[in-house]
Image (cartoon, rainbow, N blue to C red):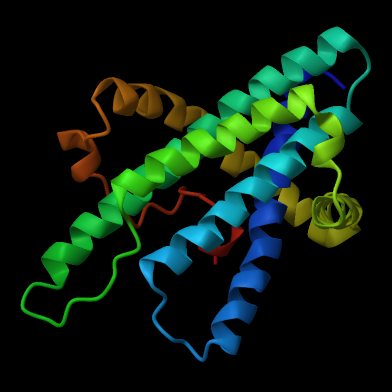
Length: 215
């Protein structure tokens, strides 16, 4: 598998993972009868989401290798894409939190689901887990991650649905690539939104953070 094909397929993996996780989120909301989640619950679920995304991404790297050099290159690129994805999610959540504060002025306050002091450690922790899997790959193979990995492969290989996700994955990956420059600027700016980011249209139809946002 060449590098371009690997990066493209990783975009498909991200898209299908978001689709599967969306069903899990929907089930939790049904069980909780739409109850407003506490900030602790929000970040517990987010931690699980990021952990299994990291886990599945690492499994994808291992399952697609042809040589030690290939797996090193693919793992490095996968780590960079994960970093870009997580920072993109952080920026999106931060912008939503800012809009929520303005739109909710004078209305009963609800939890926005964003706290920078939790977001950054969560991202750092997820990337540390990805790094640890390199030294302890056996821990990446657990029933849940294996189920996600096999389900993603099955969906990808389904004729019609698989093609749809490949299209979604293509645009998803393009979005990640465009985010790299913004992510680097975001880190250098100390985690603050730039004026350009604040003026971006949040309803951009080419924005793909995960499959559930495509609908």
